[in-house]
Length: 453
Image (cartoon, rainbow, N blue to C red; front, side, top):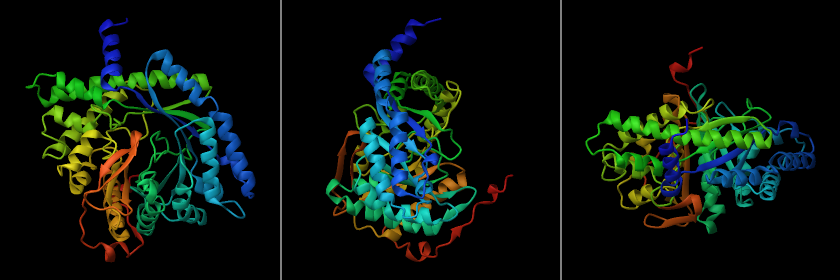
């Protein structure tokens, strides 16, 4: 039975509180594009993307109009490119990245993810070549995103890869200095990376995924905040959690409906719904704003980690009942540059680097879109990555680092990208040396609970 109140509530979610489908992402296997000939590889990749994604944007826009639900981003995620280029006699990963970029532009998607490698236990020759090519590839493309998985709860932490990725992040930032080091904003280092994540910069088509599938990322921080603000001031934590679950169910139902309709129209399988609350710089569309609605003066106050833990759990509990297949990251994002409330908290000094790291133990992803001084040593960046990987490894969760050592900038300066990537202040970090620790290399062993077969 159609409930008039539910219809009106959903309309208000869209009109007043920024409810949207944050992304529809076509996951596409490129394993049949492998060849010894780099020309053949690039032709195969280009033709396959054109074949499967030619109607993605058109059909998504049609559905958005039909249901009056904004679909903000249309994206493609492909098989980790380190696997695709490895068989070439003369591999050229930068050229493959440019092919991905060209195809993405022609089909009209915002980003293409999967310029990636999985090296938690070690690197093959293809992995090494891809990783070395990342800075140039990101500098020479507009829509390509890159990710490298360096740790897992099963394998431990590959410290050689951690140190190498700190150098790659720094170089990516320097090579895009004239764009506020945007190369580093399109590069993420993971622990326990999922292969069905629809969100950038970490999206790729995992090796256990089908030939193609449509994965959907929902949003709605503004909707959750409005629902929390509507509760009586004396509502207890259980009432608060139940209200968030109720709203998460409605948000996810919307994403499930649109995702299945679009998959059917494209004649491909529906993959997963990612339940993550993804903020934007738009006023009111902020995860940090939810903390204030809960009763904290601002993000960063004592109690922020507890509030985030409850929010993350309630979103998952509510959302999972609305979808047959939940996957990806599924939780609450805390990207500093992409959340108006987080930007304000970081600018005013309420939100420190240490507090952000603590919050990553209970949220999706991890240290995300954080700008630090451009002269930060690579060894320090490696220490930051290692800490975040340890949180993911020990807690059997996905964590990541997308950090921007803004070339030529220091504390007090800002980076600014516009759009969903937003802007952020350069914040201070601990200046104590990590050099001797991170340069030991090798692999930090997996925890004892990894032996659970």
